[in-house]
Amino acid sequence: MLAECVCESAEVQTVSTVKARKPWQCCECRSVIQIGESHTHYKTLFDGYWSSDRMCETCRTVSEAFSKALRTYNETVRAAWEAFYRRSHFVVYAGNTAPPPAPIPSQYEVCDCWCFGELWEHVAEYCEAALGYHPQRP
Image (tube, rainbow, N blue to C red; front, side):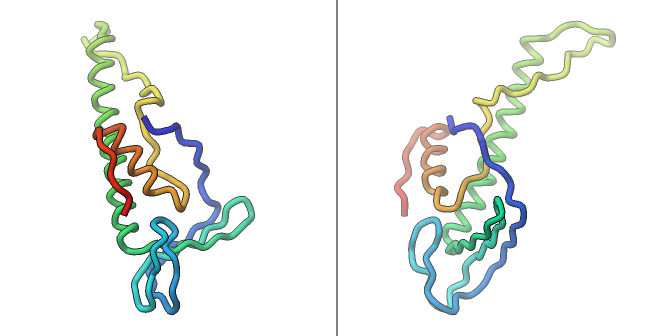
């Protein structure tokens, strides 16, 4: 399964959709963002240092879909774990109710964040672990 999250949040991050006034390189797929193309511009302050990253529309679409897939996966795992835990640890309490579910073991949840430049590696890792196939990077 995917590695445990060790991510820290940025102190400040701005995200904007802009049109390129000069050629840029996508931080994920390394393709050239041509003059006039819409793309996403990230400005991030982390550990006292500002960074600027630009992502092409294709990678932005993939990153949004990937984040949604991971959230859905985690929700499904949570629901399955709660059902399993309630069934396997059912104890009759006053009112005939099950105990509250235990926290999900960390090896079953996946992080839905990544560092710029690592999107496609995380997509491939998720597809192998959760879906059983290895997609080709564009």
